[in-house]
Image 1 (tube, helix red, strand yellow):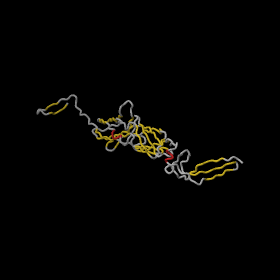
Image 2 (tube, rainbow, N blue to C red; image 1 turned 180 degrees about the vertical axis):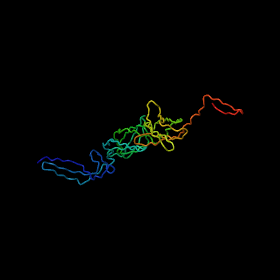
Image 3 (cartoon, rainbow, N blue to C red; image 1 turned 30 degrees about the vertical axis):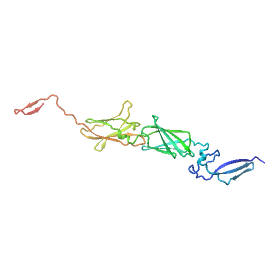
Image 4 (cartoon, helix red, strand yellow; image 1 turned 135 degrees about the horizontal axis):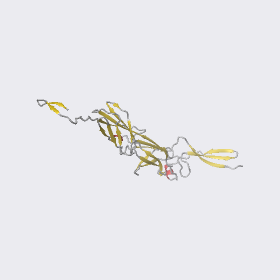
Amino acid sequence: MGNISLLLKPQELAAKNTCSQFPLCPARGFGVGVGGGLRFVVKNRYGEASFDLPETIPASSPEDIKTSSFRPEKPSNLTIQQHGDKVVLSWDPSECATNYLLQFEDPDGEKFYQEVRENTATITEFEGCSHYDVFVTAVAYGLYSDVAYLDTIDTHPSASSIDNLDPRVSPSIDSVTATWFGNSEIDCVSKYDVKVCKDGVCGKAVTVEIDPDLPSFEFRSTEELEQCSDYMMSIKPLYKGKDLGETVVTFTTSAPEPVTPENFSVRLNEEGQKSEFF
C-alpha cells in the first residue's frame, strides 16, 4: 500500500466576507482569519479523497488578533489628487487595519498629524507652493505596522494667493509699466499673462516670465497707448492644471506737458494791450 499524506486546508465560507465582518488575518498561529472549515485531503498513488469537517471554524476575534503575533502590513502605493485647495490621498489598504495614522512634514521640519479609519484622507491644511513628505502607519486593533514613507506632495498655489499680488502700476503719456512680487503662496508660479484694455477692447496678452536677476516681475507695454485715457490691466498667473483667476487694476495715462517757446517777446499796442507773441 502506498504512502498517505494528510493536508490541512482552511476554507472560506463566503467570498463576500470583508475585513469589517471577519478579520482577514492570522490569529494564535493557526493562520485563519476568516470564518471557514477544515477539509481533510488524503492522497496516494491511486488517487485522492477528501472529507470536510462539519463544524465551522469561527473568524478571528479582535482579542485573538491583539494577543497574536500578527502585525499589519505597512501601507503602500499612494495616489495624490489635488482639487482646488484640497489634497485627496489614497493608498492600498492594509489587511485588518482598523485605522491609519498620517504624518506630514514640511521643508522646515514642521509636522502635523491626522488619523483616519479608511485608506483615504482629504487634507486642507497644506500651504500653497510647498512640499510635504507623507508617512502612514496602519493600525489593527492596537497593533502598529512599520511607518511607511509613501511620497512627497508638491502643492499647487493657493486659490486666494492672487488676491495679495498688489502690482505697482506706473503709467506715462503713451505706455505703462507694472511690477509685482510673488508671495510665498504663489512663488511656484513662474509666468503671468498681462493684458491692457480700453473700453472693453484688450490688446494681445504679453507673457511675463520670472527673471532670476530681478527681485520682482516686470511688465512694459508694447503697444502705444492714448494719452489722457482710462485703461484696465489684467495680470493672470499661469499654472498648469489650475485656474488662479486674475488681478485687475485701472490706470490713466498722462497728459502731455504744455509746450512753452524758449524765446518770446510781447508787443503792446498804443492802449498798452498785448497784441503779438514772438
